[in-house]
Length: 420
Ligand code: HEM
Image (cartoon, rainbow, N blue to C red; front, side, top):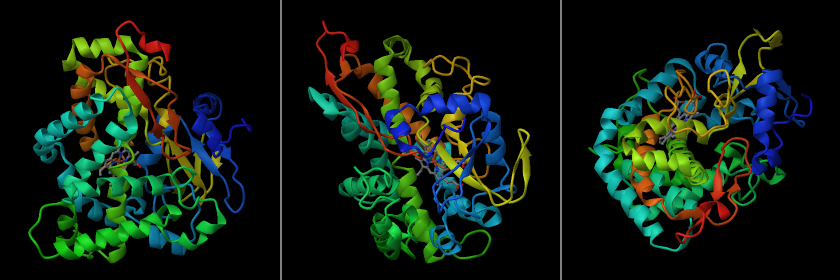
């Protein structure tokens, strides 16, 4: 398996990485992936059971020691960039609980009417055009508008929030990054999340909101963050606040978007599956789980071993980087029958798209589910007549399984949607 290199961004951009995931999962479930210096290399885990085990065992596999991304950080960088996602133990729980009540299914139910109205508006405006880019007109716009509402910021700021998210998460994609993360020029941004200058703008924006909300009675996410004391008694530092705020902007922006694009593409490519949901829309809520498995918008997160761990006959040494490939685990044939079949009637879809039962399990999972359900309840009845109208382009990233462009067009009834 020495020829498999999960740092090879071409394979992700071209969509050929899935064959490598399959080979590793079957033949090398614990695979050592060398990296160019100064990075030391990492272990890859691609089986469902292993991904679940590692994400649940935060004592042996820390998010805090070296962060949650592949980039190797020195202690100063770890400290400066740390958010809840890169914190273990009691402090992590305290930070998470600050906002967890806002993200329960029960709290979010209050957004359903707003979301449905927003979805209809977004979808109707897009479909009124004969041809458009689905990412730009539908997927990118919708999740960020929801977040803007939760942060209580004006709708006119959504384009700016999208652009910040792209610049940060797209830090390995020349279409998005101002400074590529592997370029020497990014060295001056080494203390910023994603090594991205966009982070500075996000911090400034967040601090400005915080200053205006501190001491007020607002119920938006920023007000909640600045006006509560974490349950461990330690106040939220400026570092805690800015990195928390930035995490929300990225996580609420760059993931649900791609889930919507991948799913729409899959429905257009599999008219039989679209027909099932058009005929029986009551199946859509359950089908959301297959949409999430299929899309797998987050390829991986990283942990650092805190002690030696034996696995598959090899030893992960304390200090080693361990990467859990959620996307690969979502194609594990020991869990999913014919994993490459997009099947909206699957039951008990035990995907790891949001992680699985570990302390860092996606805080926004219920929000993402709600957004995706409403989007497809509104979109599916209107999809008839829409077809891909050109190549779909993927992000150049082994972190986010993102779609950059997805041109679609209304086709006449004589035309087959598969001709494109
Ligand atoms: C389809 C959409 C989404 C996907 C695929 C996704 C995926 C993930 C994954 C894989 C994790 C880490 C899990 C782990 O390490 O165990 C995570 C964590 C997180 N997600 Fe999401 N996410 C999505 C949507 C959202 C949304 C809409 C928000 C809300 C703003 C959000 C906020 C977060 C936060 C704050 C964390 C860190 C939680 C912690 O460290 O305790 N996510 N997400």
